[in-house]
Length: 113
Length: 111
Image 1 (cartoon, chains in turn orange, blue):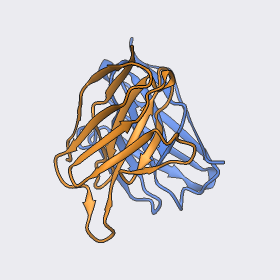
Image 2: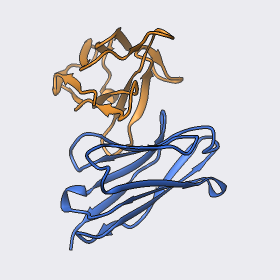
Image 3: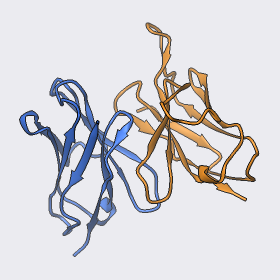
């Protein structure tokens, strides 16, 4: 199984600050035939279902604010929030869908100071 | 629009079998795969298994011996059955199609 490792486990920032969080996979998620990384980022707010923010490592879903930026390739990925807002309080998960079983990281909890 | 909704019992006794239904709308089960994911209270997400669009299934190896996923395409429903439930199976159970998730159903395993 592909192991997904997220760091940090939690992070506290002030509104307006930039935040980055990391997701590393135990094997490459880059499919050579189509040059796509099979990596998604989800946001889960308290009491809600996860919401897909980014797929293919860097493609924002429709309606997702452009302050959310996904980057990386192969085994190292980053989610950046360029200017954190109060409503971004949530746990952020990465998920690989390169191979079954699909696997999630353990999450990064974002707290607002 | 695309929607998924889980249903099933909120309380299951230890050692019993859990049966959940995911009813979908806005798409065909013969065109898209549906996954089951669970989340114990206060913990992270665990991918359980998948009903592929072609009818093939795949299970998390940790659950494989207890888990079964099936479907009824005519009713747009995907089913999850898991036996020998224990307290650690207490969780919110979600069905999801890619980026679209159901609201989840809380299942408590307790006598």
